[in-house]
Amino acid sequence: MIFTNHKINFNADLCVGCGLCYKACFVDVIRWDAEKKQPVFKYVEDCEHCFYCQSVCKKNAIEVVPDFTSERFLQSFPQYK
Ligand code: SF4
Ligand code: SF4
Image (cartoon, rainbow, N blue to C red; front, top):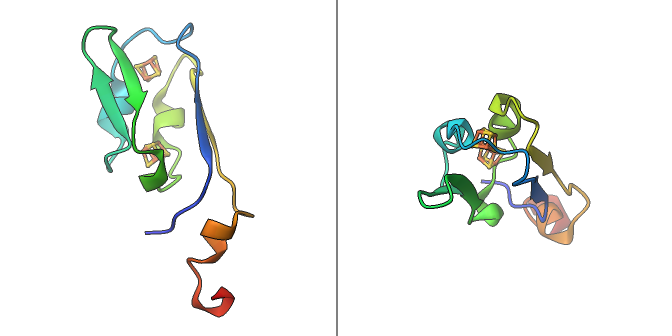
């Protein structure tokens, strides 16, 4: 698993609560708030930046923003240690 300090921007105003992003995420980043009917980006540090959640959202409510320059990302490669 490669760690980065990237962000996931979520626009709750655009979200229609379809749950596709929650179903698309194959790791534990996205949880579901049943009361609000919206995703919760809970464990962003585990994100694999596959962009599935962003791709499946028909409302453009999600933007995955990788940070490949972060020290944490570079530490994933042995030659940078
Ligand atoms: S896919 Fe988009 S519209 Fe559907 S729940 Fe996720 S953020 Fe909301
Ligand atoms: S980019 Fe991939 S791993 Fe990251 S939250 Fe979205 S679906 Fe999950």
